[in-house]
Image (tube, rainbow, N blue to C red):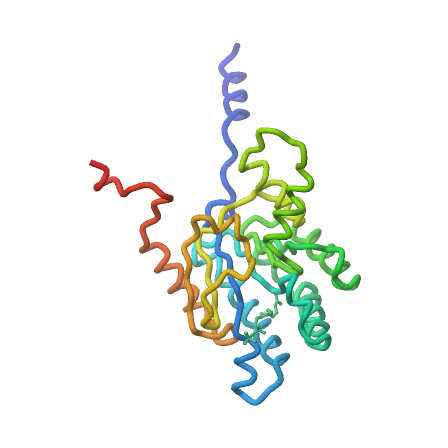
Length: 255
Ligand code: FPP
């Protein structure tokens, strides 16, 4: 075999370079406190959601510079359908508007947009906007932005289990993949590195329960409409200062 041939073969088997999105950490966010933020200002809850949408845009822009490769935002839980219908309708309109307005900016910033969750209960206009935004940003590799709408982690587990029924020797990876598939995520299934919740409550609220097995949890009293890129930077900084052991013991103490 000639030298040239050998070189060509070698390039072929080399593992693909990770994309910037794959190299960054996975941050998940529970964007809580919109309603209280608005009420404190004597305004309707919906005003808090509108202010919250502006914050989403800023945080998405700041994320790659904070070393974030995947950002999963909890926009609407399966339990949120129980809210007053006016509020639900406004949120659905906000999501659609966001997708339409942000697609070009996402392409410019190399951000891939994806909605995760169920798709059989959301308004058809939103569904159409989702498909357009996802298709237009499919090639983007700097940040995987995932917005969870009609999402429930427990439902995802149940639907994945149904799909895998009868399969023997199931691995964790296979279950992860099935969970991603039922929620329409076709990229790499990743554990959450850092979960941030704004608004002062300290709970997971059925968000990414499986993926958060070893996530660092970060709670802040700041309400979502007041959350800034500097707050995001502080949270990531704290994350890097924590020692992650994944159930093991630190090397120095291993003895
Ligand atoms: C929780 O605050 C927030 C939500 C249920 C909606 C999240 C939506 C946004 C941040 C706006 C738009 C999002 C996108 C992706 C464009 P809450 O209403 O439960 O606040 P409260 O606990 O103070 O009542």
